[in-house]
Length: 120
Figure 1 (tube, rainbow, N blue to C red):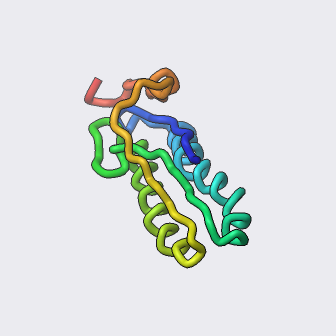
Figure 2 (cartoon, rainbow, N blue to C red):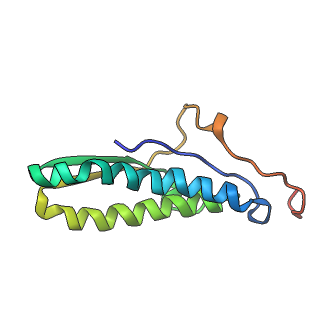
């Protein structure tokens, strides 16, 4: 199960490179690293199920969430591609695209300083 996630909310021009890299590192590369860790054993067994928690932000762009949505769109593409490749190994992939859920996600939300944006 891949369930880690971090958000970045704010005007794109105020988002630092480091904050954007963090979002992609957790949301996309975290899922990839997790899958890489157990995929060889699943392939040897020729069975398994991978569950990835994503977001409605991977299906449609949300205002002031462009980097977060981009990371979730990337997760969608990863899952679509993997599902086809893993089918001959009897490994199934489930992508859960959640809407708002009461978790600590909002407490960990990255919000850049709006200085420099006309949308202050």
